[in-house]
Image (cartoon, rainbow, N blue to C red):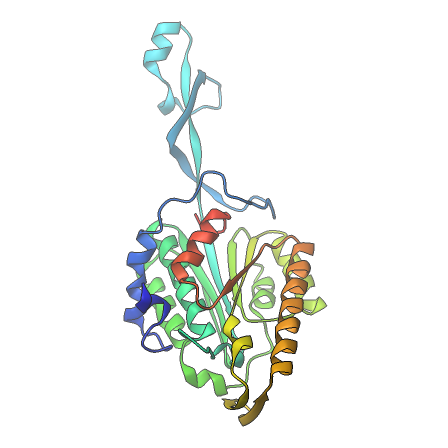
Length: 305
């Protein structure tokens, strides 16, 4: 597990992401009644067929499938009875990644960008193992990559390649695009999807909130934020950091650290309030948490089955 939390490099190749399939298989079962399952959007999924779990046996109705008639009970009662099964739904999930240049940083373990990619890859593998459709919209550096939801091996390999590309450190120096994943998904008229958004945005504009609200009308959205909580524990001194604007020198003092910590907590609360206002669950995690632990949390809250 240590190798998963602290990989040798923040840059993950396709093989490293493929190895996450083992962890996805061992996540266990999602609880029957999640801690919180928001009922957002319209009918989100199409029927996959009748489920394997039988709920009851009742008198036959004209609309029932004759294949489900329980002949033994019908013979005993003299009335035609049918078996009613639990509905099994076909899930279709879109993984949305929104990274700025600041996501390619971390004081311990790995980068925020790497942890987000690990998590989305776990969710992707979990979706594939359940034989459901998975798509993605990845926005990082100057790239926008859209993969429509499909259930094909070649399609999933393309997803792993794109997620691997998103971890490359060189993207720290690139100019980010102005288009957000939710804006792009909205223009594509995406509907009836479960959308998992991983973003390092610290604050949402009114335009973002309006677009997210419109997108959530026909989709079920979960927002995931991962932050490096050790940033406010840096020793005092000078630090040299490089981003798309070049190398910068930053002076860290006890006062500046305290101010940063307070501002971060205020921003997190505001983000939570913003998303709650439009009915989107906000999930916050620290960088030192394992992607497996995060995935299990999402299962407990109904964001992952």
